[in-house]
Amino acid sequence: DALPELDDFDSFVLGGTLIATCSWKRGDKGRPWQRPLREWLLRQRQTGKPLLGICGAHQAMTVVLGGEVTRRPGGVAAGSLPVKLTHAGLNHSLFGGLAAESGDALAFHFFHYEEVSRLPEDAVILAATGDSPAVAVDYGGGWLSVQFHPEASHSTFQHWVDEGIIRPPSSEFAYCPLASGRTLLSNFLAKPAQILQSMKANVDCSTCKEIDAPSTISMLLANFLASASLPIDGSKFRLLDLQTLMQHLPFPRCLPISW
Image (cartoon, rainbow, N blue to C red; front, top):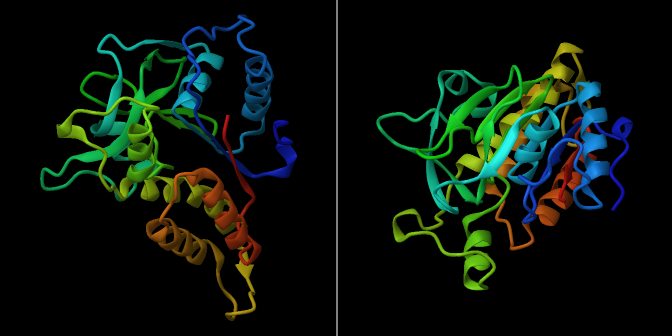
């Protein structure tokens, strides 16, 4: 599919790939789709519009800005794994409401065999695991990325395990239900709503009187993401439901992209 026109959307979510990213270095031709994506990322960067990269996109964004991705010395990382927020992560809007309390570990769904090993200049690490130093990064300029999968349910990963698409994690970190991914996505999607707030936007919809748009949109999105039960093809289901939701809300146009 053609990459979206940047003027048509206010924010973007870029998904992952099973294709190795560590061989995709600056100046390297790579696969046919990688060069157009690199060019698109650089143009998108100039717009200042929010972009959330997931898994392979986390790695691609790092490489595009001059960082480095390498094979994990410890091999494949798989399962619902605990992450540790850095000081910057504890105070970052992306992890709002997710800071671990009372000793409870914060966890997300992982499957990757490469990792960000060197950050681009001025990038800030928000979270790490025990053996991956940068699983969430803020690059500034509206760019955020995560190595884990907030968009996918544990049943999605278990299906891939059952079908032999990915190797199973250890029993200690077997894929299990988590609400953290939905909260993180809600936090990211709330950023354009803050832009609306700065414009003092109000909404007049068919089912309600004039209400404060940003707070109501954030609440509805949080409720939607918390209650969504995603099938195996989760990305398409979520895209369709978000489109349906946004037909009735003046929420900025956000396009999830899978590559």
